[in-house]
Image 1 (cartoon, one colour):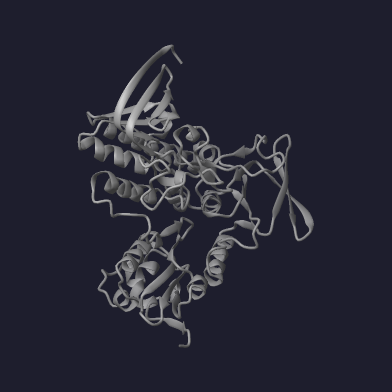
Image 2 (image 1 turned 120 degrees about the vertical axis):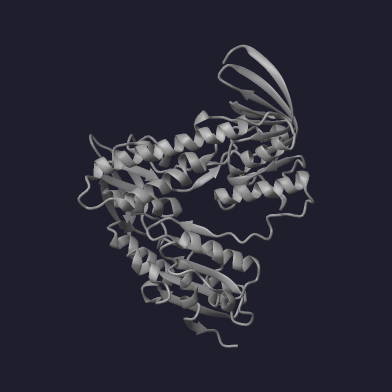
Length: 465
């Protein structure tokens, strides 16, 4: 860092180049507001999703599915990594250029730390800046959590998800510690590329949030792909050897070991707030470090907002985008939009993907609903010929419906195109479209949405009145 120092005054300061922050910065900048956006790394213009999250990993999902048995695993993987990184670089440049081209927006690459509720100190490669703003948006995202397992953090075989997808060498034997969304997706990707994959999950089963019937089908698909899933496994130690790492774990009172050449700790992500010095700003955080916000995303300081992963809750880039809409409505709109009425779909990008929204059957009953269940295996949904056309008939579809009102309470779609279908279901739920209306709608042919015609006509049980 050089010895120079300067001061900037902005209408809006955005800390973090994530989806919510960049969207708000662009809209406010184009409206004439003086906006300063600070991002600590030039590798993260655009945020987690296009750089180290959604886009590169789903690019690898796509390329892993295209590999044929006769294609050399290492060559195919190396080429896939290169292609995915090229896409990432293109999107990174596009994100930066979009904002930097706006006359009233200044992008600074450096680390921001609060000095007081309206001021941050930004340390760049060449200087130290003081940035003062009337309104501040915090969009710093989250960071991986490394479990406190002896030997794991210091193991030379321990890799983050970012390091893994940037390495052109395909692991021959990959262990994944943690069976959440990240762990399952990476297990599916690397098994299809040709790695031997062991998934170690501490709970009694993976897909712990889902109903038993959905979890059973999804788990069977992963096992059938060749993924070795060990549940109720408590990892106790990681030992480095000359060419491998040995993972020691307990299961059913017995000690087991597995030798691997790469370990991915998939124990979740924590809000990235540690370096912000939020105490100086008077911004309160929760026990796990997330920034406390109200339903309008205001923090304990009314002029400071938190968007995306940093505020806790589900960690999806599309929620960060919607957060920007909530904040913009507070700053430039009527102030009515909030986070309280969201219907949030989610997808695990295994093959085929598992997409869910709303309540499970178990949750619906616990909430006091009398429910009816529509459910069918994809292979048995005659109204969905697309599944046969693309040779992907694995999976199951399930709807949880209020028996009295016919309103959709939730759905789990494990099928080809589920990541798209679930958005239609979520929209139907948001606007009160009944199960019968969704069932009897006119859909193009052959398409996956036609499955609604079939599965919603297959009511397998209804609670007694």
